[in-house]
Amino acid sequence: MEHSIRQEVWKFLLGYYKFDSTYAERQYLVLIKKEEYQILKSQWQSISQTQAKKFSKFRERKSRIEKDVVRTDRSLPYYAGDDNPNLDRLRDILLTYSFYNFDLGYCQGMSDLLSPILFVMEDESEAFWCFVALMERLGPNFDRDQNGMHSQLLALSKLVEILDSPLHNYFKQADCLNYFFCFRWILIQFKREFEYDKVMRLWEVLWTHYLSEHFHLYMCVALLKRHRKKIIEEQMDFDTLLKFINELSCHIDLEATLRDTEALCVCAGDAGSACIPPGTPPSLSIDSDAY
Image (cartoon, rainbow, N blue to C red; front, side, top):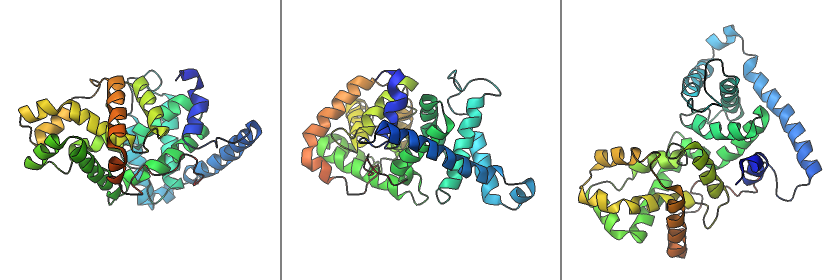
């Protein structure tokens, strides 16, 4: 996708804009949501120092956000340098989201998901609402009980069993069937595995729900399958496997992986779909107006 049209297209892909909306309806939505965003933002901006001293949850979340923001994509010109206003916007959106969704609040990894959205939108309010839409799908990844992550890892285990039984049997022998070595891939949708432009390309594929709304799980299978020989020949245990997976970062051929993933989706068919229980994240319909 041409970067020049991402700002508009992502709003549709994320469900912020409805596909059947008119231009006038979208312009009205932007105005209404901008006002709503400012109201939400004012909730934490109006907290005085005296109040903050008695509001431990706010202090804790603000501290975590500020620590993560200064470590997020600083090598990119958009976020580089001291006193960068884009870092302030990143922080403000995350703080506002922690008030918008107070139960979920802020968890490490959310800044990774927001960064490309703000980069594309270049507008604080628009980025916030697109992030809200994304978190309607990925929010369960960050639930404290980790049920969302566990359900995806369990589904991944079942997919590997039907699509690559030798690898599944090896993981079983090596006591690696929890698939925690794929945790980062799933949690932040491969955000740290590819260069920035390729992450945006990948997310566009994932957001279309092409072939499966769980295309990301088939992609995990494709990557593991591609490295099956090395994993088995070197008799990797969990720690070695985790190190190996993490070191694949920025050394993955995205286009080849997408082709492999597409083939696996087609090959798995209904049997693959049956491996993934209803409600497994990201399970939100792309035309949802839940937010």
